[in-house]
Image (tube, rainbow, N blue to C red):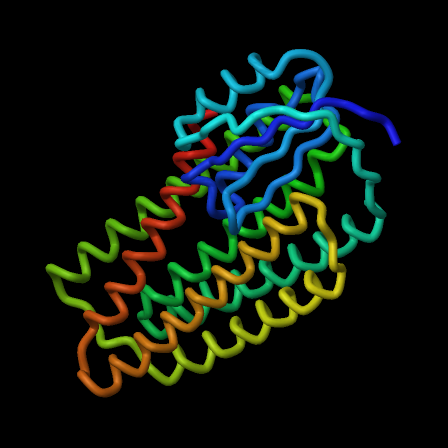
Length: 264
């Protein structure tokens, strides 16, 4: 195997695929970099490269994600994995997320549930990330950044519009959402995300983007459970507040991811 420098960074604010994509886009195009590896649960970034690590360190620090350079060592460049299978898997997960977006958005509007609408936008944000990962393969750095920027603006507009609607409903008239629809559709979304998680686990990949996809899907399952809980509270309290609160939280999460993409 080929020997090269392996520089390691601890990035305290890198805990989901939004930050991972941010780092990827920032370092994309460095001629000395051969491979990036992400350990998101432990917030570790490993960069396999030739030459000095200083320009890479400056680039990572410029993202303001709380990065700390841990040092460099000589290491073997890991072998690549089956990119065709990974591409097919990402497309499958993309389709699942996009279908769930349509289902949740439609039923959310019909049932007056901002939780479902917000979760649908979270699904759309996921689909955009997966779509970017698939489409950007082999593209020039400038093209990747334009795609990311466009998706970031789109997500931000949707999140701001959704949050504004939550505020309007909070202070104005709003119908109590249909809790049965909230629970049933969120269970369907939960099943879809569980299937995605199963497929990602089955791949058993150590590739960075595959790990990020796994964590992204795990976060989606947590959101699904949050909407289900809100539906139960709507039933017991006969109030719109649980639905509006979970909707606001998800809109904030989507906006946060969009803003970090736009920092590029």
